[in-house]
Structure formats: structure tokens, C-alpha cells
Image (cartoon, rainbow, N blue to C red; front, side, top):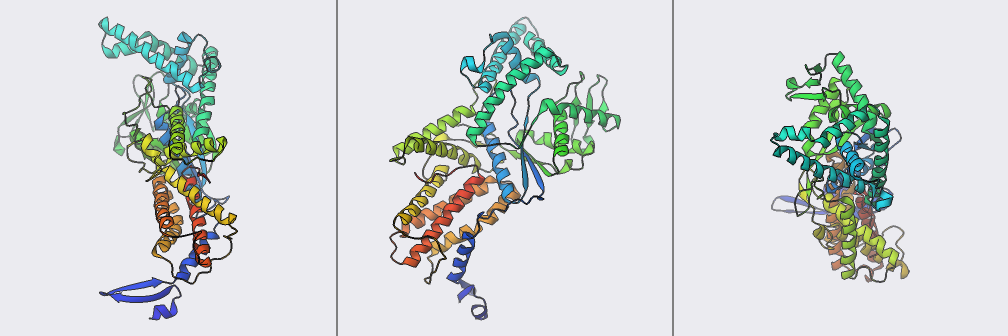
Amino acid sequence: EWLVANAPIIKSFNVIKGFLNLSINPRYWLQMLQMITQDPYCGSKLPKPDAPVMMIEYSSPNTNKPLHLGHIRNNLLGYSIAEIQKANGWNVVKTNIVNDRGIHICKSMLAWQKFGNGETPESSGMKGDHLVGKYYVIFDKEYKKQVADLLQQGMSEDEAKKKAPLMIEAQEMLRKWENDDVTVRQLWEMMNKWVYAGFDQTYKQLGVDFDKIYYESETYLEGKNKVEEGLSKGVFYKKEDGSVWADLTQDGLDEKLLLRADGTSVYMTQDIGTAKLRYDDYPIQKMVYVVGNEQNYHFQVLALLLDKVGFSWGKDLVHFSYGMVELPEGKMKSREGTVVDADDLMQEMVQTALDTANELGKLDGLSVDEVQSIANMVGLGALKYFILKVDPRKNMTFNPKESIDFNGNTGPFIQYTHARIQSVLRKAIDQGISISGEVQLQQDLAEKEISLLRLLADFPAVIEQAGNDFSPALIANYAYDLVKEYNQFYHDFSILKETNVAVRHFRLVLSREIARVIKSSMRLLGIDVPDRM
């Protein structure tokens, strides 16, 4: 009784079987709706100029082949995490480290030199990354033939793999590259340029970008210097063959190679160099690496090594580890040329979206440009949502058909709901019904309306939780819960045909705010939502 008399939020109470039940005053829900309408950022925080810096590395491709399905999961997770952390007030720097040097690049270069007859992206009509990838596959086929010949001559498998002429030539090419051989460097620059032009197209179509791109060809020497420095300080040690190692057995790990006997660097050396350059460039508070879970051990080692070479921030690095993604047919391999190509997959998704939407009559009455734009949105939205709704740590199977369902926990279902709400709001305007102004409502709200308001009010907390957990899946599944609830409401309640003007106004404002939150939540996943469908 005291609460009812003194707390405006409480309307009434009753006691059932020893439990106190409180009823919330409808005015409280309306005040909450009013607060939501007044928040232009829908629960996101804008980073202040002096906000702490979080750098997020994702993508990290090799320049010897196009991006594949695994890269798609990586790029989507990295981009979405960056957007979520921005919404939590971090100053985010999105970065990419391109693995543009090493034996794998030399394999593509050598195969092109031997079998390419001067073929270019222009002469072949192929994207540059696909063309270079083609020669990586050719190298592998020719190399396997040579190994088979040597095995027939009685060589052991290990010896045959080392002594195959193509492998010896590729290693010689790498040595020449490291010694700045002019011809090798020119070939390398030309083929990498082709690849970058191809990557740029793929990134643009996928809707991801970067604030700063690093290249391993520019960072590996930094890493070498740091390792040499560690050697002189006794942090690392040299074996008889001249190779440099770190002994991490005291830390519960094993010994780690840092420089080969011939002085060439390994991935770990490059990662040390890249980390140093990044911290020279930005006042980073938190460094996040979006890399598959097969590299878990690598990042345990990297954190220790950075600490040992004197970088105090080393131990705090975050390895955002995620599981493998497959198609229903099985795993992906790029050497055999059976890889699930990112460009092909995106094109297939857009085409499937177009076919499905046409079958369901969802594109009737739209112009050719609108149809193409919506097919793009829906196809890519389906791909992104299907991947991001899964707990990142789990392995997953991406099912293209299932992802483009207009019902259920899918991107197209959420996009369609947004378009449906926009259609209601347009009709209201066409009928001269105002959606502006404060909601004035005397009636009690229905359970479903309260449930929707509660969900809307949860959004800022979901953003915060998704940031703490580095989990786009929390945002994705929140958006699905919201649209599922709204569609039930849309089915059960009149909106435009409601005769009580105040109730109609409330339901229109509620619908508008739900559309805003759908758009905002999908934006955090890198997904666009159409206004009509």
C-alpha cells in the first residue's frame, strides 16, 4: 500500500500464495517509449575524441588466391565486432594485415612466369585475385607431378618434396625477393597489384572496410630487428645451425622458432614486427585479433613473446577465436582449386534472393533498379545474418537455401519486417495521419504491447553485453526476438484501422521505434534493410 501511494511507477498490487505481484503503471511504459523516441542513436554511445582506442584486426588474406568462405566469416565477424565496440564508446581502428610475401606467393609467381604466357586480368577477363589463384593451383598440380616422378625413382616422400625442381626454384625466388632482386620484385609488385584490385571489389561487395592496412613485406624486418635485440639481451637463444629460438617451457609451452637457419623469418616474427608498428602508430588500449581457432596456440605464444621483448601490452591482447565454416558438401581447400570462392558465393546469394523474392511476389511493382538493389540487400543480408547469428566459437555449416527463407530466424525475415513497418508508416502519412507528437494514452496496454516496449528498452543493455562478450550473435538473436514479437502483434492488433485515435497513434509510434531499432541492430551486423519489398 505504501508503494502504491508513494511510487508513481506502481499502479496496484495483490498477494497470491505468499507472492507479492506488482502492476506497473501504463504511464511508466509510455514515458519509456518517449525516452526511446528522444534517443537519436538508439542506445548506442558515440565515441568521444578522447575515448580509448581498440584496434581490431580481421581479414588478413594471402595474396596468392581469392577470398573464400572462411574469409567471409572472418570479415563479417571483424566488421561487426568493430561496429559493436564503436556503439559502446570505443574509438575503433579497423585493420588488416596482408600476407604479401613468403613461399606461397613465390609459388604463384613462379607458375605464372613458367606457364602464364604474359596473361593479365585484362587479357583473360578474370579478376586479378582469381588469376593469381589460378597459378597457385597450377603450381600445386605441376609440383605433385614432379614429386610423383621422384617417388618412382625410389626417393622417400620427404626427400622428393624437398628436391622437386619447382620447390627448389620457388625457394630460390624467395631468397632473391629477400635480397631485393629487381626482376623478382617487379614481378611480385605487378601480381600483388592485380590481387589488391580484386580484393577491393570483394570487400566492397561484402560491405567491409579498413582504417589502416599493413603489409607483411613492410613489417617482417621490424620483427627480425626485435628478435635480434632479444637475442643480444639473452631473451632468445641460437642453435648450432644458426636458427633463433624462444624457450617457453617455463611458461608451460614449448620452444618456438623465430628465425630459420638461413635467416628468413616465420609468421611469429612478422606478428611481432606488425604489433610494434601498430603501437608506434596508435595509442592502443586493446588489441583484438580475429583469427580462426586453429591459431589458438599461436596467440598464446605471441602474447608471451611480446611480453618478453618488452611490450607491456602483450599479455592483454585478445584473440577473438572462431570456428570453421563449411558448406553442406564439406571442407574447403584452395590448393586443389575446389575452394568455396567468396565472389561466387555472394553472386549466387544475390541470384537466389532474386529468384525467391520473385516467386513469393515480394518485388511486384518495383523498378528494375529497386529490384536489383533489394536482391543485393536480401542476398547479402541472408549470408551475413546466417553466419553472425551463430556463436562465433562454434564450427558451423552455411546453408545458402536455408538462409534465404522469408520466415524463421533469417536475415530476409527481419528485412521483410522492416519493410512491412515502413509500408504501414507510409500508408499512415498517405491517409493524413500524424505520427509526430507525444503519445497520450489513458487505456491499459495489452500484454503484447508491454512485451514489445520491454524488448525495445533492453536494446542498450544488449549492445553493452555484445561488446563485453565480443558477440554479434547476441545482436542478431535480439533482432529476431523483436521482429518475431512484432509480427505476432501485427497479426493480432489493428494499427491503421484502430478507431481510437490515441491507441492508433501509440501503435504507430511503437511501430516506428521498432523499425528504428531493427535498422540499428542490423547496422551493427553490417546488414542493410530495405524500406519497401
